[in-house]
Image (cartoon, rainbow, N blue to C red):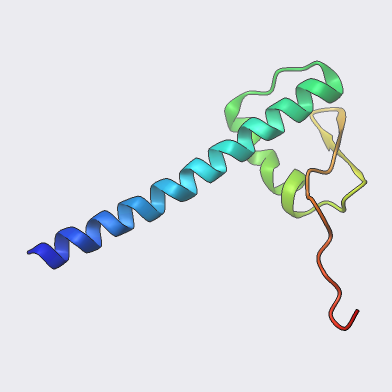
Length: 83
């Protein structure tokens, strides 16, 4: 019984950590849209835009979000192997 409880708590802890991280990204997207366009973005739309602004874009480029150009929020484009 105790192994089950410990493993369940570990899973719950792991999932809540990922949710908190995603929630922070949503807030960052909302802040970026507010700064770039003075528009408020709903939570559900901001969540849909996380992929575009953090994963799919090229740092330095702008991404169209609901008719507004928002800078890519990805910190870097990744390290190049061998350099």
